[in-house]
Length: 263
Image (cartoon, rainbow, N blue to C red; front, side, top):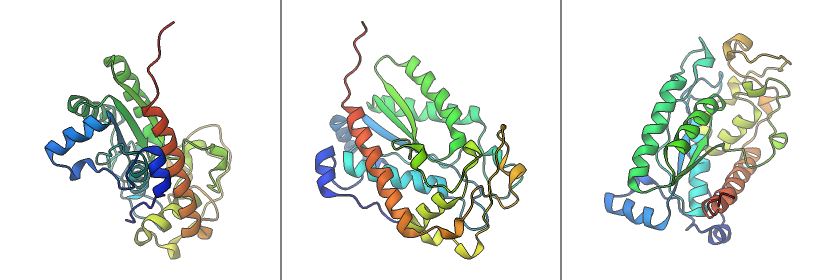
């Protein structure tokens, strides 16, 4: 997987060193020093699930980890190892997926944050790479913000910080069904091209519906999106850079945000 490349000037502006702070690469004494420097932490949340005929199962975890590391390099906020399993049962009978129940995800996130709270962190950014994790992460955030008086938590996707209408997914309908599409394929062609097999691409023209369905109920190939064969590493590089910068600017502002004064 490619390491994120960030601007030294932007890192200086946002408080980072230009190099990600990887929690698992620190020694125990070094973790205490990191917490002294910042009480914020990024928790990437991915999935291990089918991504059509042409991409590996690692897509959601790799993309959100890559963005998280870029944000860390720009802001100095450390990144813990990604949660690599997600709420992925909606892929149904399509092969390869390893799924957690929403209840399991909620418990997992609570345990991780409880551990990090004991380390001294008080600000928690759950950076999500898989749409169907959203419900569990919303519940986790609600439980944690009511458990601790001196902590704050926010769940966001790696594309949350710029308008959804600007995400060029080549998908018109289907709400959260967008999957293994032009956008994700472009990102992976940039981040980890060895995980992409463009000669196997099968696109799907999406259709409108009121209901959300399992992926295997709407797609034999496991994808949801058209013109996937037009994905490029150049487009992926541009979108990745935008995801990293917009998220980093939001995180830098968030960790400096004053606590509200009830009135």
